[in-house]
Image (cartoon, rainbow, N blue to C red; front, side, top):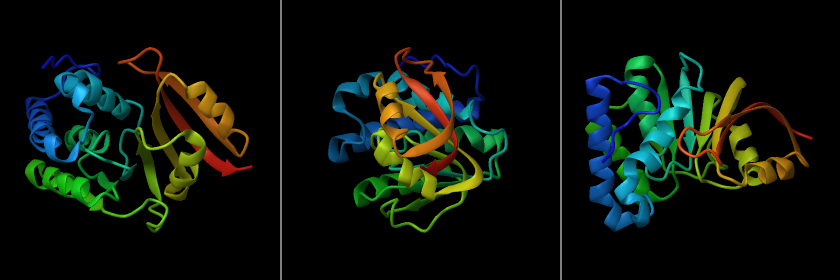
Length: 204
């Protein structure tokens, strides 16, 4: 596993927890398919680093961070590990309707002592969370994702949404029904991908 870090150095404790998390994914993945089997050998670069870079785009001291459709905890668990030292009071809520994946996330919370709640519910049915950071990775195209994201954002919140090479088309489609303030950041792990930072999301 190549543990080069796109965000610069992290503490020994944080790195150790990220390694433990990788081991948990490898142990559970054959049973519940947390990540594509074709990417398991590149787990660090394809998934861990890709999630770590989101922390650098978030407010420095968030209070409540919600990750929608968390799946195997990408980026939610990775960000929670990173913020244990950077913003220890930040509480994470990971939303995952698949009961088996939610059980995996609960194991991560216990094994890694994370400041985190796991909600095994659908994002559209969960009571509004009023979070100041909302993330979602590989959950849905932007037009379908924005209603879920906007539901759980506080008034001054930011949504940090990793998107692949089709990000421009997704943005164009979303603007037919939504208005928002956008900052688009080139991914540090894929120069065709972007992390979209959206604020003030409102239906047109």
